[in-house]
Length: 288
Image (tube, rainbow, N blue to C red; front, side, top):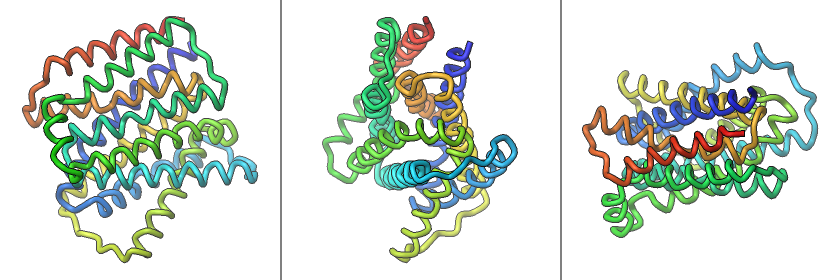
């Protein structure tokens, strides 16, 4: 039953993150990457603090916990910073699928670092989801067109985000084990917030003033993002990181569907195949 709960939480994460990225792109286009990231992180930090204080006992702080939380927070900040920089420069069809490929690194690290092992059927399911995430989240025609234009399409930034998040999501597992899912989230986010403020202060970045509509959009993105992270952290207490990561990383498919509904963007045939592949992979992974 724990496995089923983990799968459901992972599905909740990929829906929340998909919607959050869709909203974040709207905000970044209007007020820039740093202002958008600051609002996003500030909006998420409050609810995370309340949830951690209400539902989690305070852990005993150890050197290992503090160091791992600091590393995770730093990597999380780097991932977010370069994702938002990429969204500012390029299109979702390029930035989102590349940055979402963090799950490949996370899965490999988790299997080697934490000795996680999967059954044959589940391994097949992971591979099918891997393929599905790429095809479902990528408009191949636009991807090929944009990826060959220049370095200004956000691809480089997305690659940095991918690597940073790949290790961050792997390292969050021991932090969760030591402090619980909500305190782990609070520690990582608080440290990430400190790095963000330090960057703003050192670079003397000027912040834009968003209007009410953009402010609401970015706050909504932050809350969805926080919910997704909370669900992810709880899910890794019930199942392997290498199992959960491919499911949660399918979130660009949600972003794509939202773009289809609200922006009237059409799905390519390969994207439809990708969505079907994800569904098949999830079924295979749920077979114990």
